[in-house]
Image 1 (cartoon, rainbow, N blue to C red):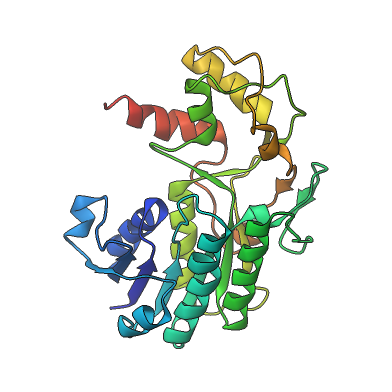
Image 2: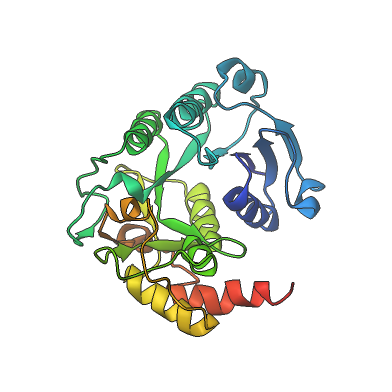
Length: 284
């Protein structure tokens, strides 16, 4: 039975763990507390409380496995948290699990393009932010150890959508800032991408893959559609701090990952909201 460690088994990690479990893998999940939000899954897999930023803690808890997935979150932390969770965390995992395939979930935020152009894995990845630069450092650590890097677009899914949240809180506006392209991916499509690459035997360099849906879309289009669907009016002014999110403006291609046979179940935002988010919310 193949074995996988999911280091940082939160929103994405739990979804990935369910796929691995369905396919007969032995699963170990590491979280800060050792607990999982999904109680059904928690009772079916091995759980441990491990600090990814602590090399000794990672080494003490290491074991023989086939694949290690780093999908831990900084929980909105500062640059020091990024150093600890991402750069140090990847370094500690690659050192402790030298025989395993390491998959690191990075972000499409490493692409700093602002002109609305299409980008792929060969495009320049020079982020302007300190956090983005730390992610690039973590990517290089993973790649140097023979690992795989997944650059994830903005993740949404049941219980999670930044744009939907801003609309409901009355903070969504399209009039006070230049429009920009938004790249998104459904949580379940991230999980399927992780499993797809975990089970492939021979992945040659370059081992970087963008994980994004098929349809980058203008931010204004999404907000206007959500506003109409939910009958919630858009705000008249852009809140302070919102403009900063518009600094990046690019369209991210998923062609390389599609060439390996992966395809998103939710190929655009309308599919994701109509088939996943809205039905899930109606249950409450």
